[in-house]
Length: 384
Image (cartoon, rainbow, N blue to C red; front, side):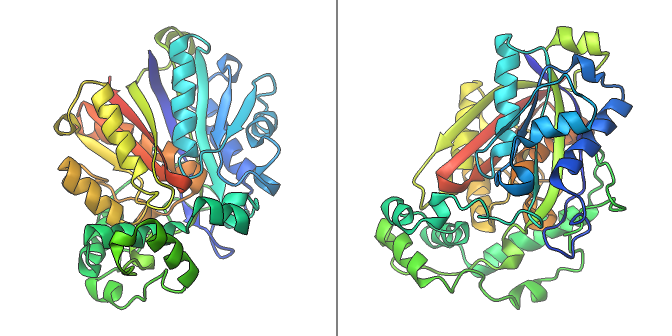
């Protein structure tokens, strides 16, 4: 059995050269959290592995960033490894580490994620899924924003409905107060939140993904039932790029006792899912449905859903299908408002879910992320 014993994250900085965290390297974001965990009482010598999810593993995020971080944090005898499941990298680091602990391979470990989109831009690894025309043609892969507009078209969501969700998540984020945040470079809040967002400001935004006609053709070739693609997502209903890192301390009950740490939540089950790489973004919801069923529960049993806001259309679909109202789905706002730091997002979702369960004195929570190429990962938690 695996427990979440502690959790810390950095603020989310704007994923641009003007962002407050642009001057901090991704490895230093991780090291900052490692040192903060040690200051809170974690004994590094008891940690048996550090697993970090990162989506663009190149340049400053290459060469096994996790091991580099353990060395720079003076955790020299602790191993480190990185993994990549695109946007679901951070949550998959938690899921895979949890499985190793439950299997008895590890006792105490640190899992999480990091991404500095301002320093290591999206697609900068040159991977064939996004950068090789032959691979793109064979798979029929599309930009995530095109997939979002395709989902909106197929589901019949209107621009007004999407804008209403974009406003809602901004309002929630503006009212929220994170409890597990470590200030970095003078930033002590999520930099991307726009508390002055109004229906009028959202209505005035132009469609964000209407200038890729070749991508429209790929999407419609795979899903001709859509007829014509309605480009309804804007920057106000899409996740903004961010810089951030998050770490969770995971362990079994014996490791928790040795480390002097109190179990906060139990990882009940995890699930991965995959779907059509063009429709793509529904895999996160598929993983949620799978993990709830695996635990013998129903959606109505879940008190909190932390679902990465991979565009507003997918959140509306999630809410409808799982009957997850505003009080249960992303109660403190999500990545549309707070920003999406690819590798870090899933780890933040898991940690924030634990925080919210404790805040509510509630029992069950699910965190989930949809990733590129039709991937999804979900983690089901039970507050201790």
